[in-house]
Amino acid sequence: MGSNIFGGKRDAWLLVLVMLVAVLVFALITSEFRLNNFAITLVSGLFQGMLLFLVASGLSLVFGLMDILNFAQGAYFMVGAYLAYDLQHATGVFNITEAVPDPNIRFIVGVIVAILVGAFLGWVLERWLLRPLYDRPLFQLVLTFGVSIIMLEGIRNIWNTTPYSWTEVFGIREAQFTLFGQDFSMYRLFVIGVGVLLIIGIALLLRRTRLGIVVRAGVEDPEMVSALGINVRVVFTLVFTLGCAVAAFGGAIAAPFLGATISLGATFLIQSIAVIVLGGLGSYEGTAVGSIIVGLALATMQQFSIQVSIPVLATITPMLLLVLVLMVRPQGLFGEAR
Amino acid sequence: MTTNTDKLLDVRDIHTFIGQFHILEGVSVSVPRGAITVLLGRNGAGKTTTLRSIMGLNQVTQGDITYMNDSLVGKSAHKIAQMGIGYVPEHRAIFKELSVRENLQIAARQKGDLENNLDFVFELFPDLKRLIDLPGGNLSGGQQQMLAIARALVPDNSLLLIDEPSEGLAPIIIQELISAIRTLAANKTVLLVEQNFRVATLLADYFVIIDDGHSVASGNMSDLHKEHELVQRYLGVA
Image: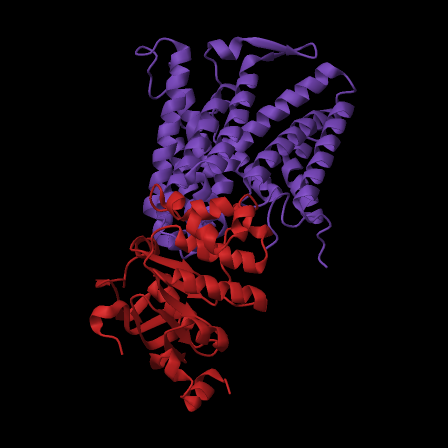
């Protein structure tokens, strides 16, 4: 017998429930049982969880299907953030404020451009750089790491290292909503809503479409999918491109709150790796659930670390959670024992 | 012997490496149209690698494989499958997370493939009908084998490559499979790998014996019984 105390899927959901209850109870304690403080933690946790999902979903699907851990995934998130920031502000390198004076439309333009650039760069990486290295997993790992450094240096070259804070006012960012007597920017609700919609949308894509069936089968056995007459490489390219586009989209919608900084990519990459391992490598539901748990735990620990004046507590939270989960379930929450 | 025009598949002196190991060192197999041909040989002789080489899953470095007069060498597995070759691998390789229905759906190559062939599949394997919404991983070994064969029957394949269908199955299930393979062979050509000599005898019209990466004998299955020395030497059957 190994150290795997929790075995089946039902046990995985039980563990998820236990973790969620534990995090929420701890959040209540750190909020000193004040509902408005608890609401801040809850909304902030879900907000961070959804952003994490946007990076981690692509990372997880690509790993499940192609056995590639794409170290450049965080860089795509960062590219999305810089593009959205740049196209919104008059100080941007690509100043479109005169051509598009309405900031709401500029925001939409920024998001669309981020998605398109993310998809294009993702396609280039998979089709032209990774494909020749399919049989060399270690080389692929080094390559994606190299590409992330190139993208980082590219960003430094275009936008320099100054952190940019979002200053432009636009509709949804300024609107407010109230939860437990606490006011929040409607934009947080927008990001949470978009995240939930994407979780459902990708789940439907995987469950209800032929492409989804092919991707799920490919995660199990790409060789057999190919032997059934399906060009798996096209599916690889499609999923990889989609994963990068979603990460860039995540960066673009995160930018109004988080701004655009050089450290954004690395921070989200590390947290996302914790999410996909904790959720179970290659498991979509594991990634979705893992993102929410890590997001809520991060927000709780951010609050707690301020109270106890130990800022590092929040930084190490994703890895601490990962270690805890792997101790009781080495394959992650929804992963298969290999 | 079969004439050249009868051959649906012709494997000529192929060599295949897996990594640095030279696994096939000259295998030739003729598969006559409309018949069941069985590859016989001891464990590790190269039977599975022969099927994988035909399917494009292992790269052939020398020799040629022609199917309906088209060369398969150098083609990728998905292109070979699209030419009408169905593959039922060793250990079934059904998708455990997908339902039985999805396992069948994914095999459809054209609109209408599943609808057109589902009745035949259920006629052959009635159990699959009641299991249609269960995940593949919940099926027993015999049911998984049925699903793996059924999956190869969804598109209109002319040739089926079936690797060790009876492996690890109970005698009663093997009997069902023998009957199913006989039925489907009425309008398909089958190239079979089978370790169980009794099953091979019941099913096959022709045989090819592979030993240590070489094809060493071939002929009509009905004549193999007379070749006691051949059977004992290469198959270890008394």
